[in-house]
Amino acid sequence: MLSEPRAGLLAAWGNALLAGLVSPDDAVLAIVGEDAVHRVEGLPGESTPVGLTLALGRLRTLGVTGLRVALPAPGHPLGLSGPPEFNARALEAEEAVVCHGAAFGLVPEVYEAGPEGDVHVEVVWHCLPVREAPPADVPSLGEAERELAEALREATEVLTRLDVAGSGPVAEAAIAAYPARAERGREVLAPGYPPRAVRVLELAQRVGALISLAYDNGHGGAVSASEMAARGAALRPVERTARRAQVAAYNSVVEERERGVR
Image (cartoon, rainbow, N blue to C red; front, side, top):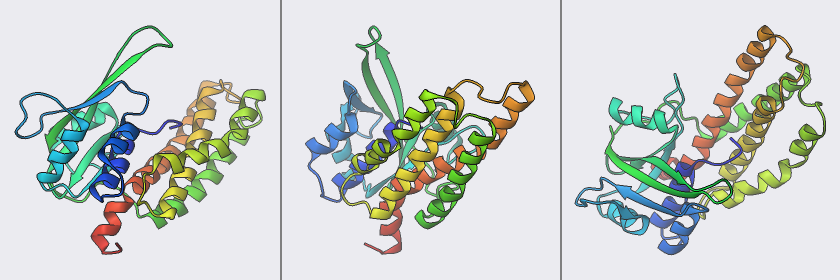
């Protein structure tokens, strides 16, 4: 969770483009990031994959007015609405974008080639039909912020109890890097997002950093299999909360539009 999902970038900057707040070139540049190229396959009326600029324009003409994010995990179809075929593809990719205003969804497939340090990454977004229904288990921004504050306390307590939070220079460096990570929330969310969404995404990133710290820093004080299992059991709900908050932040523009806030 230290890196933001490609679905989040596509939804955030796609929403800004659909709202006329950024140019197509700026939106595509932000979405592609360090990848080599993104294409969209399966768009109605297109027999071959097309570039993002054309794809986003075509989705607009097909009636798409907003983009939502889904970050499903086994047993947790977060942000999905069906049908089963789309849900299965999204679960395999662990992320997807669901269109608002027209029944389409986009699932990324990532291709990598080249040696370590010089990897060439291409992404193909598969456009598939989706069911027009409320997305599963997505909280409001207010709910997500409250849940995250509690999750952050719980994660810190778990790390301390398992002797991970104080487990040496690596942990201290990771904790010291939180302010820099928080700044990424402002970079990831495109123009048009409410300040609360930026705040929620920043907090979700911080919780994600704590979770990664717990899993990446060896076993800490969890020296037995049962203690390691207990750590995983304690952190899974925290991770789930952070993912829900990510989705709430990315989807907030569409949700506010639906409620008539904007």
